[in-house]
Length: 113
Image (cartoon, rainbow, N blue to C red):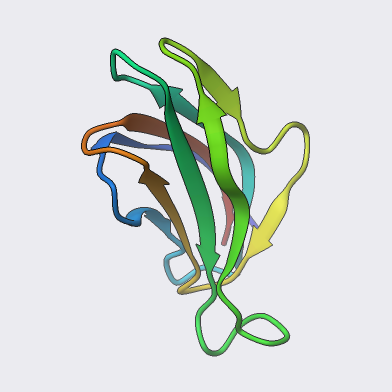
C-alpha cells in the first residue's frame, strides 16, 4: 500500500455547506488536519460536516464534527487538533460559513492506495 499526502483548499466558502474534499476510489483516506480561517471584516461562525457514502460507516449518518465554531475577525481554528478521521471512498468533508464568502478552508489528507 502506498500513502499519498495531499493538500486541498477551498476559498471564500458561502453560507451553505460546500464540499472541500471527496474521498476518491482508494482504500481509505485519513484527514490529518483542517484549518478554517475567517476572511471577513467581522466575526463569523463555521460548521464542518462529514457526509458518509451510503456504503461506508456503520450507520452511514451525516454528522457534524464542528457546529457554530466562533471565529473572531482575522482568526483561524484547527478543527482536528491532533485527532484523525478515517474516511472511505465517497465520503465527503463539507464546510459552511455563517455569511457569504466568510471563511477559507485548508485540508491535509493522506490517501491510502
